Image 1: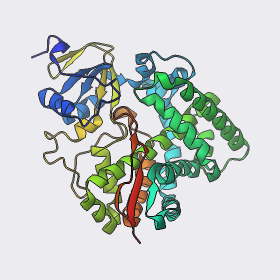
Image 2: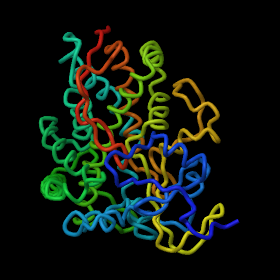
Image 3: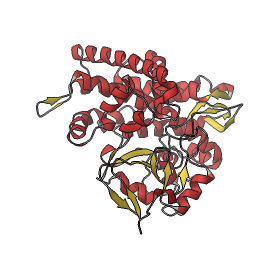
Image 4: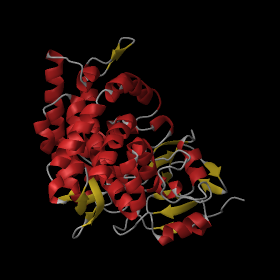
Amino acid sequence: MAVSSTRELPFLNVADPDFAMTSDEVVAARARSWCARTNYGLAALRYDAVKTLLKDRRLRQGSHAWPRHNGVTGPFADWWGHVLLNKEGGDHARLRRLVNPAFSPRLIGSLGPQFRALGEELIDAFHDEGRCEFVSQFAEPYAARVICMMLGIPQSEWKTIATWSSDMGLALGVTFKQDLPKIEAALEGLYGYADDLIADRRVNPGEDFVSRLVLAQRDEDSLSHEELRIMLVLLIFGGMDTTRNQLGLALQTFMRHPDQWRLLAERPDLGGAAVEEVMRVNPTVTWVTREAVEDFTYEGVDIAKGTTVHLFSQVAGTDPAAIPDPGFDITAERPPHFGFGGGAHHCLGHFVARSDMSEALPLLARRLREPRIDGTATWLPASGNTGPIEMPLRFTPGN
């Protein structure tokens, strides 16, 4: 039976900086209905609904409307409207076809030893002290220097990349509009950096990721300069921001489950499974957005053309209707999570993120025994894109 009015659905105030995906009100809303009303449209809460709607052709990528939802115009809104993430149809297919070869699993897989060496180097710097500030001493430099490896640029540049990426990441949170000056300054910096990279690789092509993008061509089609610079800004920002946040969230999750941390230290082969399980229960991207391109009804709810539908990946990943025992267990077999989105807009960089984090987490588990918060951790809002800002840790040094 169709719901005659969405007012009958539960309401979640996702614009509240204190809103949290793991709150009792969200769990109660999921038990009551497959979806809820929000400040920005509807939110799908259950696993089966998220899985289905991710691939539903009556919905398009909805994040294109995020600046409009926040009353934002200007340079960031212009860039956001042209990124691959927000393209549809032929434009999206063409760009994805040209960019895909740069994400060669062979190229990324060959970087595994470098990822491990980087992780060991960063841990060595604080290991003997038995304490660290995890974000600034590991997660941020690790994520930024992986991007440097991918792009073939000096790793000494990592701090510049990290700062700009962090500032850009503020655009994906609920404080977007108030942070706009900082966001647009970071965008300008990243554009300049991308222009310099493109100019250099046109003259000095190599085997690195940027060279592959610059040389990308298929059936006489190629990426324009503007498409290249837009793509590089997205890759630098997206790859850095999400990996840093996800590593912090992984530590948070494992500190709540110390038995699993000990198991990972003993079983480094579970690194890949650990990444998947963390992203199921505690992803940095807590929702994926779609927009209805026509009127339709789903599971008794009438959805009008133009309605924004947020697919709550974290809430779906712990839905007991799909996962009867949704507790954290890196040895359990689980249905696919939605931390990388899905459908036509499945994250292009998922293999990079899976590769670098699956190398980092077992190293951390082996060398940082019994990690615990040492002081006060600070966090981004617990919705949108989330993660720790500062995470001071104490630990028992391991081998």
